Image (cartoon, rainbow, N blue to C red; front, side, top):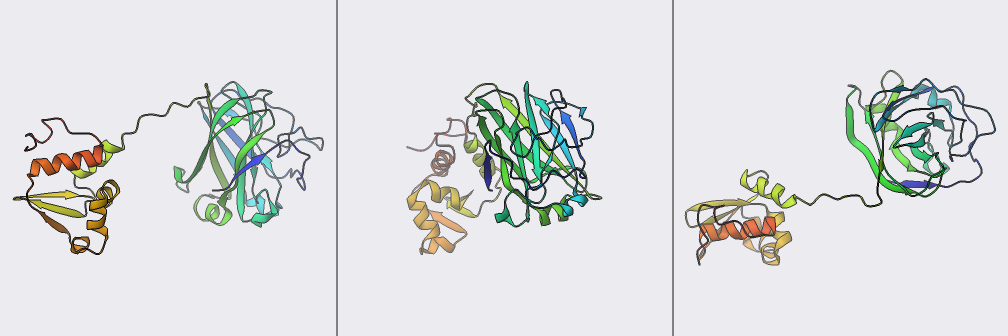
Length: 288
């Protein structure tokens, strides 16, 4: 993923192509028309761009519909922009470069950027873009997302290499039209709350349900499955035993002696969860 930063600078576009309609359907805030701006977020002095009407649907996202069949007539650096859009009480514009923004990409990529239009600063924003597939359903296989603090009006953030045109044409262009779904989420404070990690519980669920287990330990008369990669990541002893040249590295089951099943299960729980299990997790207490 290549992320490009655009700052206010003299326009470098070869032309403002008037023949490619872009229809933007907003899903949040209010949309208003504004003066035409170039790909750098600056006011254009070479004439306006034609836009379709904007229809309000919901909150946070918008659909950017591009007449992709017309983009073959464009050159690198030509931009198709949305109307000025309101999200989070700020004004924004989406700028799409159907044949890429820079010459170095040889016209093989589509570039897309989000520009702040409002005269504001220190606006922390999450920008997300994904496509609608040929079944008209959202496709997240090539989704892009970033978090950025906009420091001044006109600044833009996005990707010079959002996606290869060949991938778009094969998977997302329907009857000559491409639909990009753009999410603009304004975070009200400079600190994004990061939820606590539940990876331990996720790993334990995989262990309990025997999903993806690839090694078993025979303890007394009980067979206990586990994941080699988890054990190797948590213990250098297991790493050497399961991935080195030892016999156990190629064995699907390993015999353990001098340990009780409940004790070994408690050890596995700690390795997966990074905490000791409650006394009743395995129905018995580990042997002393």
